Image (cartoon, rainbow, N blue to C red; front, side, top):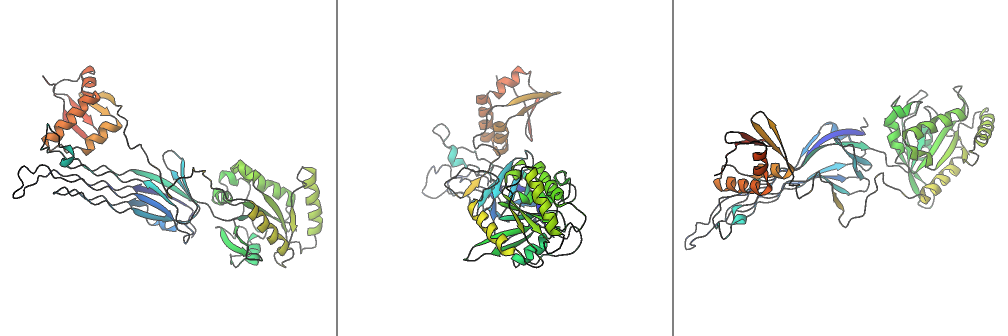
Length: 435
């Protein structure tokens, strides 16, 4: 089974907790704080593996969680950072944020890496909080949570030339003739339900990848028939080889078929109308094909497409195959491959796509529900998650930062008094008015 669409959950590893310890060694008076920092959590990294051709593995595993960092230790020893979780994807994979529907990565090159979910930072140990006024702090932070998100993976076939056309026009037969691929071939509609790839060897060591794509029908841009499962693969090809049954064997008009397919391509993605295209007039071994070809050329000229290149062939008898292959190779070599997502060059090969900035926005909002005041804000919620409330020193530090940010002042303005409860994220505590 060919799988070209998957939705997966990714989560970076949580950072390790910092610790609050003190040196207690013989002959070391007043050793002071020695708690180390926790290690950072691992990242979830997508890496392109050219040995993969489908998204089949994601049918069986849909959740990817990187390991968390180690806790800090005494004697000023920091916890080890966690290993990154490497998730292999085939070339041609598009990574889309499920919430925003934004394309965040276009995975095309072997070995290309993208950090999809970044691991959390490790919590700081108490040695980080020692000051002249507080030389022995009992403060240590919890590790930061790793980023998490749902992403959609779409696989677009990495082929230089895509064979398009109605079902049963001879695309699979042509692929089997010009390459070593062995697609399933039959005299019925929709023989090809998944893309088939083949490498076409041209003389002098030249070659290109040819894809036999599933047959189209009218309404495909709206998902009719194989619809989007077909059209998403056309976007990746550099050249479109439009195969037309020039024999009219099923009572169809070749020109009307050509117009209908191009209309579907245009409605799906207007840029496909600008993609270089040639017409492959197949089944020319049938006697009536010559008459249909003359009518086809005349209709192209009448409608302003007289410059369209037509290659009469017969995939069954191999008539005209050599000329077609050389022309396709020439076109492929003259057109550079371009990713679907334009990315600015960076010094590092691994790109990082984060959900938020490293420095949190200190703005906050307060809303009231009965006698509970709910404080919402990126910075204050992150601080609450990292605070160890079982430590008196940590609670005092948390309260000091809240005052500095103006949270206390704003709560009073909203009517907070002794006995009211304040909720920040998952934490709830009683508001106490200082004298």
